[in-house]
Image (cartoon, rainbow, N blue to C red):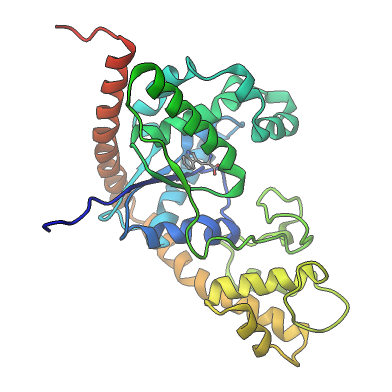
Length: 337
Ligand code: TRP
C-alpha cells in the first residue's frame, strides 16, 4: 500500500521448561496474539535457555512441542508471525559468542536472576547460567527488534541487551537496533499465588494448589479456586493492602472476563466468598477449556507442527543470517575476496 509505514519488529520468547501458568498467559502469551496484527512479530520457544538448568532430555523435547502447540492454541497465527524453535537457528549461538567478547564478567555476575538461580541451583552454577542474558541479547539483536514485551523479571536482561547493542555500535559502527521494553495494554495484572497472595504465582511452588496451569482441566481449576485463601470478612472488594487474597481473585476474574474492578465488585455485592470463588473458577475454565482442546488437537497432528517449525526456522534464519554476516564483517572476520 502506498505510504504505508513498515511495521515495527517485535521479539519475544518463552522457555519450554514445564507447566505454563495462567500468570504467564495473562502477562505474556495472550498478548502475543493481540500484537501480531500491529507489529512484525517473531516468537521463539527458548530451548537453548532452558538447558541452563538441568532438564530431562525426553521431557524437554516434549515440552518444546507442547509450548509450540500452546502458542498456536492461544491464537498466535504462524501465517502472520515467525514462530520458531531457538535451537533450530544456529545464529543465536554464533552471535552469542561475539557478544560474549564485549560483555563483562562484572555485569553478568551482578544480574539478579543469575544470583537467584545460582542460590537455587547451587550444585549447578554453570557458565550457561551466567551467559543466559547474552544469549537473550542475541535473540533480540539478531532480528533488529525494536520492541520486546517482557515481564518485570526480565527488565534487567533487556537493559543489558541495550547496553551491549550500544557498546557494539560504538565500537564497530551502527549495526544493531537498540530495543525498547514494551508493556502492552492489559498485561499489567500481576497474578499472585492462590495459597500465599504475597508471592507471585509460580509453577515451581511446592504446593500445587498455589498455581493454575494452562493444562488444568475444569474440575482441577474449580477445586484450586475453591481452596484459594481469602480473609475473614465477607466482602468482595479490591484492596490489595488489606485483602490480598480477594484482590488477587478479582484481578484474575477481570483479566479473564474483560470486566473492570468496579463492575466485578458490583456483581458480587452481597454474595459470599463461595459464590465468588466459583465464578472466578468458571471464568478461568471457560477460557482454558477451548485452548486445552485445541492444543490437544494440534499435538495429535505432528506433521502440521513440524511444518510450522520448519517454516519458522527458514524465515528466522534468513533474517538472522543477514545480521550475523554484518557482525562478522564488522569485527574483522575474513570472508574471502
Ligand atoms: N528469558 C526469558 C524468560 O524466561 C525468555 C526469553 C529468551 C526471552 N529469550 C528472550 C524473552 C528474548 C524476551 C526476549 O522469560
